[in-house]
Image (cartoon, rainbow, N blue to C red; front, side, top):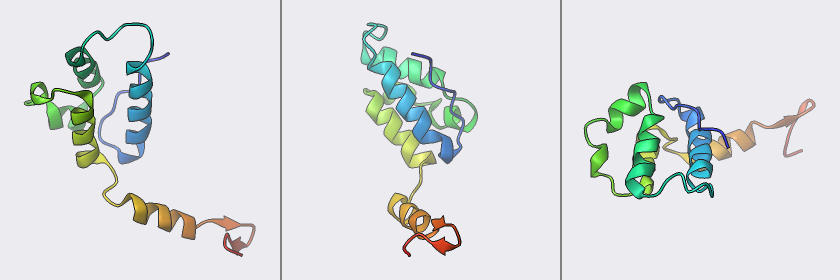
Amino acid sequence: MSDPPDFDRRKEDLDTFLDRLANELRGDTGKFTSEIHQISYTVSHLISDAFEQVRGNYLQYTTVKQLTNSLEAAFGDPDLLGTAQRQLAALHQRNQDFSR
């Protein structure tokens, strides 16, 4: 499996980053032997604003989930339900809206 792409701050890239990160961390290679190793690996793929978000305090995290929750809170979509509803309402098929 390939490494996840580096993440900077773009919310549209966050889900891809988190999905690829999860796949890499749960791989069966035995590459990550401890939670701190997983946290360090995750931080190594943060750049720009995302790295600045955790730079001074990433050692406070005891699990990768805490770290990724922090990234989601800072860079994720604050209104996932509303965004999904707007996207569904905007769907069109040919010249009609999707509901028709």
